[in-house]
Image (tube, rainbow, N blue to C red):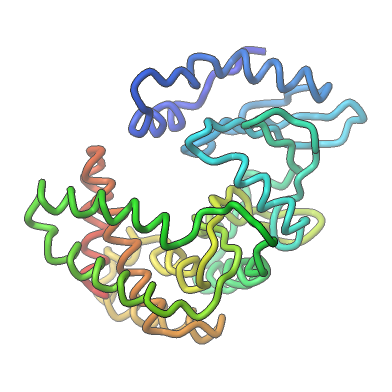
Length: 299
């Protein structure tokens, strides 16, 4: 079978690929080797798939359904492997193979075309938040996961550069960086976080109704993880005449339901929205940048 990477993946990796990166070029060979190693039969490539990995729906040698996920090193697949192993299937997809090569994950098969996002908005938020709560556990001793301070430090540097290049976003960038500094001064807890959680990262399963997939794990406070969920369906929020008030109610509702400080959630939501907006502008996704920065202005 030819392993043609989905256009979405090619486009997204092209935005971030360092000079000389040949992961996409080698992907067909890598995929064939991974399939052979676990004795699997490929059913299909998941399309449109994600923005950082190739997902193959396969059957193992015993006929059991599974997923093969292949990701470049810059997507931190080994960090994902470690997080999934630590969660042990509680709230997240189950890691299967223990002896897969670097950048290749063998995972429990969920229902890849059915995410929480398919539910009505209020129900989707409730189910997503309940799934997220199960992931917030103590990180393993001696872990090597990136911390919120480290990740947002790298992001802050790029945001400052973006503000210099586009003075129109300088005020929002300044507000986001001030919020970050205040939040990092006294974090309330240190938990293992999903890192990139949103409704589309929660898929229907057989073992449990809903399970999280695709973490980019990080260690820090719960409000950081919840912040990305606040802006889910941002295009719908922007289209509403009451989008700003709906957003503020969403912050309050999610903070109360997951026992997170409301102001800390607002602060991390601001930082993450501005960071995403500046990054979208940098790679030429102007519509996304416009939506995200307008959303950030409501906070």
